[in-house]
Length: 120
Image (cartoon, rainbow, N blue to C red; front, side, top):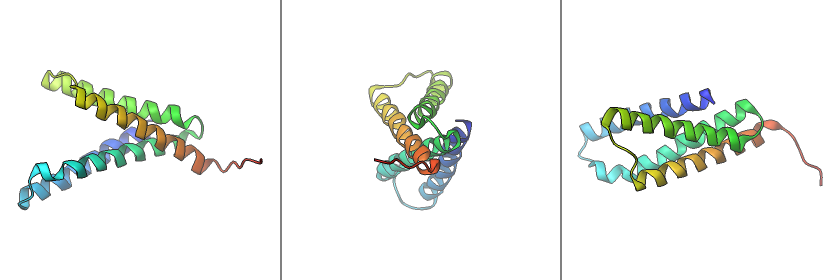
């Protein structure tokens, strides 16, 4: 699970750096990148769940879900302790979706790497 969290935060840092450079050196407004940032967040969480599931090789839904929950917990603690703000309703919806996306990544990570085949 630690590999998944490291991947998520490394992906977030790299994406943030790219977007900050785009916003600084072009005339693009922050509001026009909202959906792109959200999509990249989903991709990062899916990748983190996938990596966690691939490393664990079993119970992908659980390990992916825990990866998403730990990500949300870290973001919540950073926001609460650093900015003295709780999650609002919109953020709760986003983080619920992040956890579900991470679960799907974990399931896919286990099933792609397991090599098990079912006979009917």
